[in-house]
Amino acid sequence: MITSGPLGWAGGVVATGGLAVFPTDTLYGIGCDAFDGPAVARLLAAKESPSGRPLPMLAASVEDVLALVPRTFHQRLGDLARAFWPGGLTVVLPLEPAARRALVHCAPEGRGGFRVPGDPVARYLAARTRGLLVGSSANRAGLEAPASPEDLDPLLCARVDCLVTRPGRCLGLASTVLSLDDKGFTLIRAGAVPQAAVEKVLG
Image 1 (cartoon, rainbow, N blue to C red):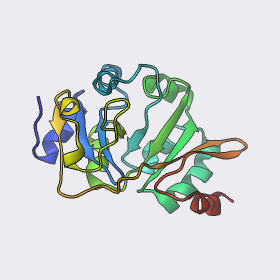
Image 2 (cartoon, rainbow, N blue to C red; image 1 turned 90 degrees about the vertical axis):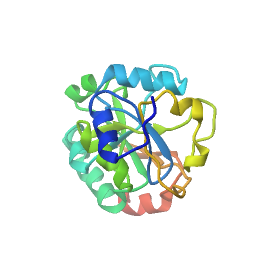
Image 3 (tube, helix red, strand yellow; image 1 turned 180 degrees about the vertical axis):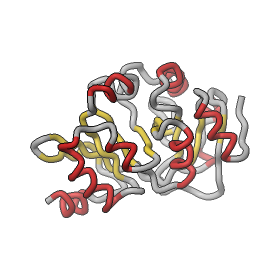
Image 4 (cartoon, rainbow, N blue to C red; image 1 turned 60 degrees about the vertical axis):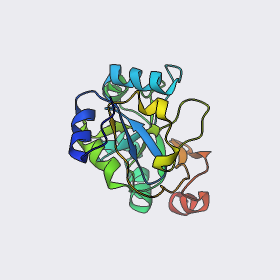
């Protein structure tokens, strides 16, 4: 069932285990509570994606991410957050043991990819869960990620519980993805934030 309506309704959907399609600052996303295993499995099925693959997560605030990762990463993550969050940078980090267990459906290898999105709709939906929303692009596997309501896949939309749209286009460029480890950082995917800007922050 698709309901395109008030944002508060969409928040209730994701807070109770449902799936939503929604705009972000970069592309349209499909999301659910990242801590809800059955909801995550349903999201993967809706996207026709294989189970066991890592999923990016959208956080309501940097504090929600800091609570999940070892303290040894707090300084560098804080530096990146001050420079690029809210915005188009996804940071992949190791998880604390309790977070590994809680987020095993999104981070099966014990490392989670997080960002605080620049779009208030996405941040609101993340806040209506437990601070963390799966934020995968709203497309079936192998199809182009949508940047506007007109780009949305009707079949995918028919598999979710709530659809939130707005006039106009998102940026149309995926987030930059980088991985932090004890030795430094690795660029995984170029995107909305230039690599040179990241290097300037991290040195």
